[in-house]
Amino acid sequence: MNLKVYYQKIAEVEGRIAEEYPVVVSLETADGGRAGVLSETTPRVAAKMVVDGRVRLASDEEAKEFRERLAEERRIAEQKATASRMHITVLTESDLRAIKGSKPAK
Picture 1 (cartoon, rainbow, N blue to C red):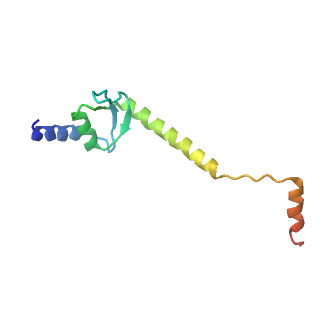
Picture 2 (picture 1 turned 90 degrees about the horizontal axis):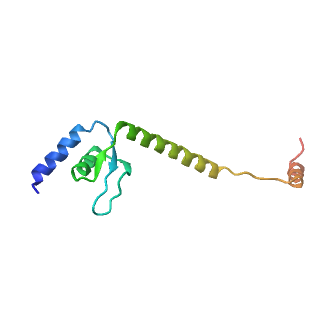
Picture 3 (picture 1 turned 180 degrees about the horizontal axis):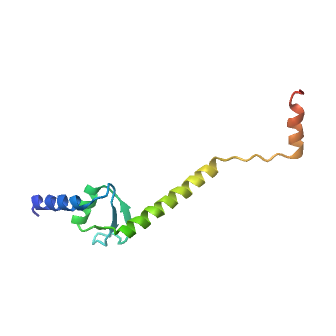
């Protein structure tokens, strides 16, 4: 393999990528790579993987759906994190009376 040609191809593909973080779709590979897995990466890494035949650039619609799904997953994770920080204390009536009785009178 001519390395000069290889890196020229990478530079050409990278030059065609307009997004700061493009979405790529994996292709099936002989070494066990699964087809259809979407990822977000840098233009340089995306270009190298395209030239290597490991991925293709996602269509605008695929990228939009991927980012919407990520946003929804992030929202759900944040809700779960918030819920795990919330603590509820259940008091019986006798506990409540004891607390009220222990406060100094005004």
